Image 1 (tube, rainbow, N blue to C red):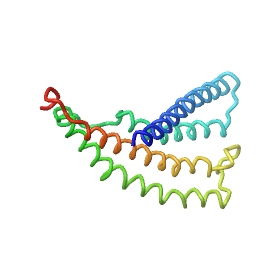
Image 2 (cartoon, one colour):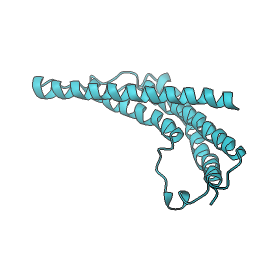
Image 3 (spheres, helix red, strand yellow):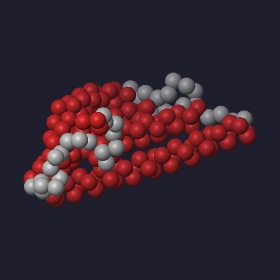
Image 4 (tube, rainbow, N blue to C red):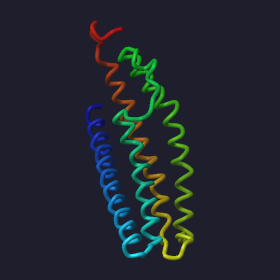
Length: 172
């Protein structure tokens, strides 16, 4: 199981680094766009669309990484007072009962959604916009698959934590 966890951790961390790169590209894009607009009175629809494409990709891929790092929003009023074993069970059931079904549903429906955009050659409706909308749409199924890997990582990590006997000092 440790081998699987190491592989998943590397994949998830790699996508986390991709999110950092997307953030940097987005900041550079916004900087360029602002300079061009306010100093040279030149507006590019394509660059503006690229801003939201980069933001969307960064956000969608960041969900799985945030889940792995336990950085998501949670009501910690009860959770913090639970034992580590109880927290592990909450994480397992939350991941399997809540996160996994919606992720698989999004994955299932987004594949056809992306394929339709590719098949019809969908592009921006605005003149000067980006021509291949299927590229940004493909982020939805790819990031959903990645989130599924993150859910598997969380579940396996928590199962591994449950297999470790809890010492008397950490029990509440």
